[in-house]
Image 1: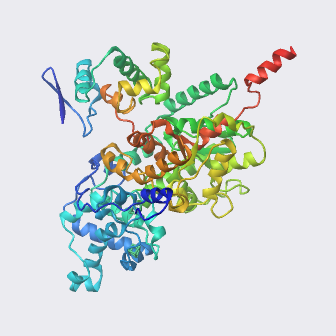
Image 2: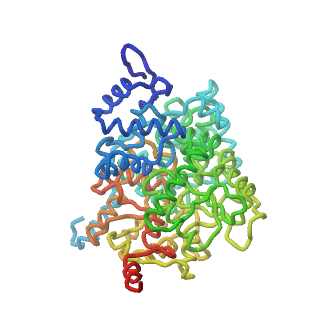
Image 3: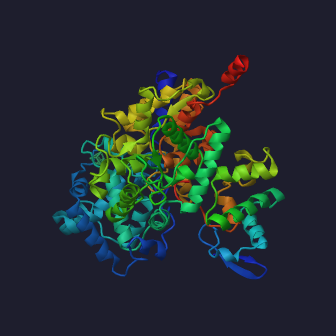
Length: 110
Length: 511
Ligand code: SF4
Ligand code: SF4
């Protein structure tokens, strides 16, 4: 189970989350997004970048509400809402966006 | 069914309609197996042990000897068939192996073969079979198609509880090295970080501060959500989903507002930042105990007098039925209050005492029904009256909402249907099963939507809430059609000093 980017092999788990977080790169994100049928736009990147910054600080992905608040600040209320997040990431901003951002999957009753 | 019954009766039956049999429909469905590191953290072998057959039988024998109920369940079934159509996974999939009695038989047949006289000598007469690798596969598959909801046991004349058998089967599987990734990885996280999510104290604090900000922006009132505050009276233990997911977070805000208005001194704990106890799901007493002991330790360290549980179904079962056995005695807590107490008991009490200022019309945009969570309904109580676990949540909802309708009587209260994601099945790799298993509940909901215009369903379980927010869209509802009961409370509360538009006008006039 692996992605291939620029001839490099990046291992992932059963669900497509990369195993070594340090393997992440923008090219890899594009590649993961492709397997999820997502074409990365600026808006997608805005979310992915926020997730990665937040993770760097807190070692976990933010609550969806925290993410939405941040996006609202940076991109305005038309985009900073749940519905739009699901338009960008149909399988959920938490799980699908985390996968593309190279972060572990949030576990538990979520 | 078109035999002259009126429409409603006919459709009501639909929710529990018996499907055409589809033998093998769910065969081979297999959630991800736990990796060695997840297994070992829980004290289980990392992978299938070479002498798995002997180990499995030894564990089965051990369980039958130690757990009298389990043995009786294996011995007592008379194949009356009353349970066959009572499981939502059977109703949703049509797979006959999802009939409760068939699910039991997967294990019972092996038990008979090795531990009963007839089975040892005349296995063909008593449906006894050898433990083989195929049987093991079948166990793994179908014991992960049971949410341990106990609905079937309500209809069994002998009270046989398939959930107990499922738990035993999972316990046996874990002991030979075949665990389920979802549950076991999560239990490991509780042990190392304190909650299912893996939310560390720093992140938890930041999230709570963020929520305090939201409440203040919203109401103009500063409402605290304290963390790790020594000397507080009340320790609130709530599922970590309440810190992360929607609509759970709105429930948390509701608890905070209730505590604020009642002037309670309360705190959350970062050490016991999880009410859920997946040790129950895998039938592991040791793991269940270890998780429960975290709550005891947090209560002692913080010096609290009371423990209150947030909205989590199986957590309340563990708390209500086993907490004292697992982690007691709680003689250091204030004995004048229930130990433990449910947040709904607390809120209902406050409502009755008139401590909350409520404006029901703030929920007028919603028409509600209530989904009884299986573990609260069938494995616990609330308050000091029989049936309190059914009445108290409804009383609270009716105290904060004007529009409320019940779903069909056969799908609520002690006969409630599981959401389809309980018992350790709330994982993406079982999504197909989850969608199908939710269908009886969804049909009952569609019925009240048709009859009464119900728009939203309230629940008091983190698993139910997540499950419904994921599967409701498949049944024509928005994902936010599932709400927390304390979210409704939160909507209706007018905090002391909170200015409504009317107040503002009056003030201007007075000035
Ligand atoms: S406990 Fe619930 S899920 Fe399991 S067999 Fe019985 S009805 Fe089905
Ligand atoms: S209702 Fe009870 S006795 Fe009857 S078949 Fe089911 S488990 Fe056996």
